[in-house]
Length: 481
Image (cartoon, rainbow, N blue to C red; front, side, top):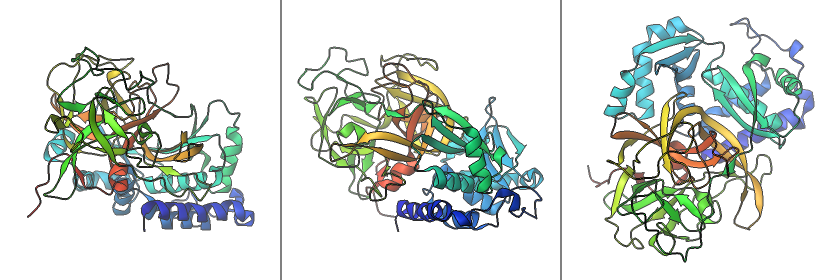
């Protein structure tokens, strides 16, 4: 069964239990304590048990939440991993002494679950590791998030939720323009057996897609070949592409059956006119007349029959380069153009300079990790991961040309400056001057256009890989043994 349908089934059950059967909700004062821990966490009531039962199957395989829940199953009380301001790896746990005793084994399993390459492993193991006391395990927080989402999913003021590994709490983000009572939400949490201190609130802007408005596709190529927005060959990540407006070429990749792969590239689904629908859109670089490819796969929207939650969107599309590109060999697979300088506070440089960044492998985000992106909205910008698996909602046009509230599942948040036109750009962390780890692609931003925003939403590689039918790789897979 598709993991999305498992998730929706589980959330529907939780929602029915929480909303359709009010008698099942017991006031927190009458709820039993977790006797083993002697605190206010409720792990024995029906709501918690149901959400926990379906949690594993609902997570995207290989996502950071999936990894942390599996580690929590192995190491009791495990609360996640993040990078602190000094770049140290911090292991969070309710039982720090147990984690300290098994530190080497735990870190080794974490890296294995992430699929860390030798270079990425060496990079992470070069960091100092410290251990932090937690109040809640990651699994407890993940279940709390499912419960609070089940109760509030129909509330349009709810913009996002995430488990914050640094704060050891569930982040609940409400529309900054809405008048939401935190006291009421905390009261709901108490009714669900969620400790009020396990919830933290944030007023956020409703995400909007970061695509640009550009001249018509009949315009000829610009005369700035060294600029991300100009006519540039060979193709690599960071360049301006055009089908229905200006977006960014995220990352050239190989796709197809082992031994029979061809070149393509990843960008955002919403850049293809309609999200979640392959309409065979034609692409050019920098303008549509400079043909390079045709839309090949656009993962369909899922569970649109159920209004709560709304449709689920993986905002990514695979564009084929094989036939339409003027010369498909003029593509630097798994590479992103470097520009003359970066910025962490505003737009960086758009001028191509130096050796491109080479993505040596894919990876999962770690809270606090330093990241980069190169796009046509803000050039080369840098920041850090501020959210590792956010569920958010956007208002987007579907295949029937109408706009609907649509759910983004397990997206990465980062404070790298972004703006319109950056949609599709690759998010990566650098392990040295030349090499990087590909994490995902730019989808949406908060309070952008015309302003540069430091609230970016990125589709994680784990979500892209799970949604695509094609076998997508950074290096050509020759097949065989």
